[in-house]
View 1 (cartoon, helix red, strand yellow):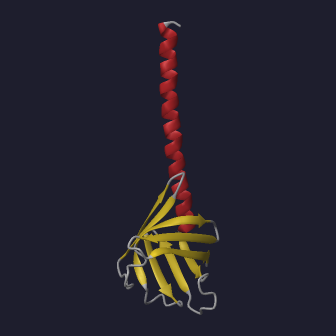
View 2 (cartoon, one colour; view 1 turned 90 degrees about the vertical axis):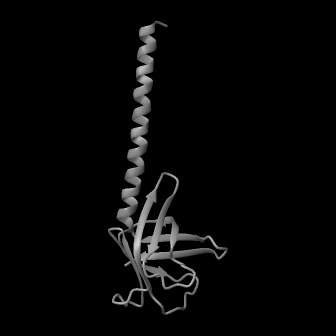
View 3 (cartoon, one colour; view 1 turned 180 degrees about the vertical axis):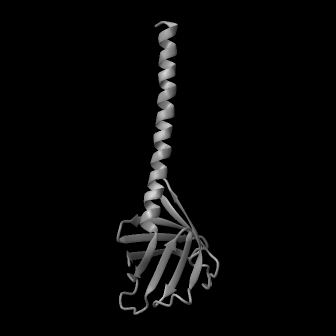
Length: 142
């Protein structure tokens, strides 16, 4: 193999590495944008833990802010705050930072794993750090 062939091979390898890195970054960005678009809007909790409850829990997401309210009482939110969505090829997380946080154990604060999100259904998992276990919330789009 001549030095010219070696130079060409190295050049091709370098461009291939840059192309693969570009595609990975583009893919991650696209995944995050698609998930963000699906998240935006209003979601009603499906009470899988108590199917006979009359309480309606609604979560709304818009432009980095979220609101949680009960029984349609939009004028008196139960929780309000900001969120950050992080998506990779392997995992999507939703970090909630409430500014009201009326719950005793800061139940909504922190990182939620987006287990599933489609156009009309979403499942979130929240692993509470102080030995309180896991919370799961299922939603349908309003």
